[in-house]
Length: 302
Ligand code: NAP
Image 1 (cartoon, protein in one colour):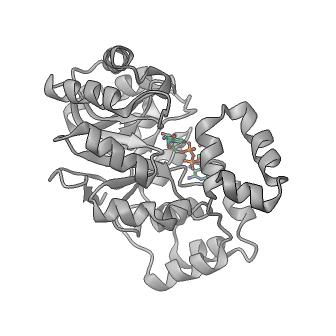
Image 2 (tube, rainbow, N blue to C red):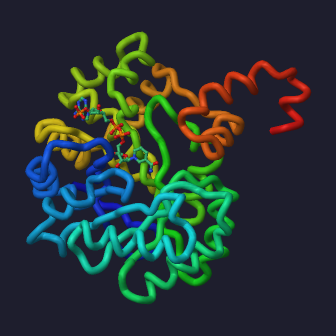
């Protein structure tokens, strides 16, 4: 397993971590993944998987880099502290390696949340501070609010089929030494990548390299400087296959081939805004409604 430096911390962590959203296969497959070298695991208070992660790391906790997240509805200082403590209890650990704000919450001043996060660092309960789904502007504000503790990572969607962060966020993170932790590197539902690959380039490359299509999709993320990937698998087979997506690299020509062949999206500012401000159930309707507004009006509200 190759390692990369987490921001400018001097700490090297595996470039492939194990994602656990919607994970329900018990501790053993996770443990096997960790033992295969992916000693980095990601969870969140909202996933319901902190307990199983705690079980998977039992006895090897000191070797594993554990990341979890606080949900935006818990960003008031007192709630934030309570959430973090509850995560530590479920994980069965005294301190977490990376505590991330799961997504921005414009309704709560970032200074209040970051104040609570800084206190947790100073109390020895959090080793490093991270965020997730933050834009460049939100990262700047968060760093200013956090003061002397650096934000070391931003966990964001990045895959062969969603390259939104290439519009500026990826370059900003690289310049600021903020690690990009790519979530949904397999497109969230793996067949979606094949749907965006009309000529079957991924399958062709898999045949040519002897790697699996999933490994190629993950390795494509890893080919970008400062990028880690946290695929999720619900079986030992998928987890081990994904953890073996490191230790080799696609060539520049192979990356260029994928870049040219796979149809990807870059979400618009409108999309990002709606996703941040609206509950999931209303997002599709809101996006449809805004799209039928006259262009002039759309430009004014965006
Ligand atoms: P993903 O890892 O892109 O894709 C998971 C899907 O790919 C599952 O359907 C899985 O099937 C399948 N899969 C896994 N390995 C495979 C393989 N080797 N071959 C074929 N199919 C394979 O999706 P994700 O769960 O959305 O993202 C990964 C992690 O990122 C999450 O678990 C979570 O930790 C994190 N995340 C964070 C956020 C955030 O807001 N911060 C949002 C989403 C995700 P099986 O389940 O059947 O194995």
